Length: 531
Image (cartoon, rainbow, N blue to C red; front, side, top):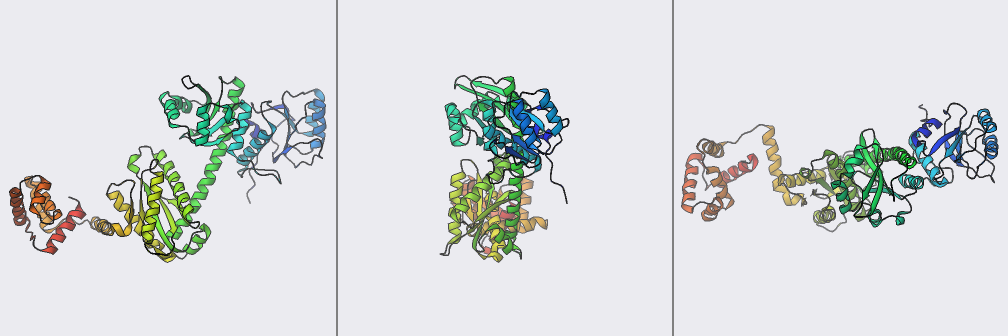
């Protein structure tokens, strides 16, 4: 059985940074395990768990610290507000009890420090947010934002690489209108983002491992910001609305806070990735329609009867950044899941490869595929300004045994849209059935390495050798249903010239245009071989 990950006092101090906590008096090493956070109340009996980090609220003298050390027993450390009065009797008591005394910066509030420490312990021990029994768990990034706000004495936002607001602190009403608009929209407004990009601010921010100061004179906006990193990967950034450049102490506090935020973002990403992988695995099992489909549908909470499958995919040609494409795929899928979930509580969606699949239950009443197409069109209308995509819709599956067929339908409809180079379109399988069959036939032809034959092969060879236009003439004639005048206009030649070419192609190719089977055969070859 593997041991639980251990969070030592030394590791806590290293990750928080010296601007938050420093060592006032140490028993020697700092290897004691920290198991939790306890807020000390002098009116209560100090019943402390072993390894607790005690937040000594209101304890401000060496004498009172010594008394608390006597009562703390197996605690890992005691935290008091700076400046910490340390005399020789206190040093002796620290050595006697083996409990470290730590100094907390006066800019921090006890509530935010408690949340910050619990969040950090959760990261170090690989758990969720920790909380004392009977208390609600801290709210992750928002608690961290409030803690950084207290340290810097400035309202703070935590943002991702795309300037979306992941969390924000209190006191935002004190900031400028630009910050207020950012928080209300949960996104940096486009005009501010463009100003930052054109001014090289993002480049400076992501190239520096230290906080930077930004001043936009025309807007009256001052910011201190730092990139949040995991090694060389940029996870996001922290932005503080300030009035002037930070002092050196607060610069260090902001830099240290970025390390804690990185831990939280990595944990959230890992948790979200695990949940998404599980949902994708379960939905893949449902879409396969095998013997395990019913169990997977039950775990996923998906309906088991009267289902339509939607296959949605971003128009990848519009992307030149693989990382941005991957992020947008997941956001697109999340939006699809929200959309179908709002329509039916037992719908589900997940990203499988590069395609976002949704399973949508439909009420009886006929025209189910048409209703599913309307759902898909409504979704694309909502996300269209942000995501260019196509959606294929499968036929209705009466139960889970037919879901695999509905998925294949949706995939084929989506492929037809890709073959058309479409974007922002929805197609139900029945509406593109013939085109889908032609694509399947083309796959078979390629797999067997077949080549054009008969009259079509002879016409291709003649055009290649003589630079002729016989194949184009034939295509125009067939597309115009034998109307010579219309066909001649299509290829921009006189009708008499067109009739001459038509006579030549029947002689050279040996094609009988009066034979319906011959016409069908050459038309199919033109579509399949695409020449």
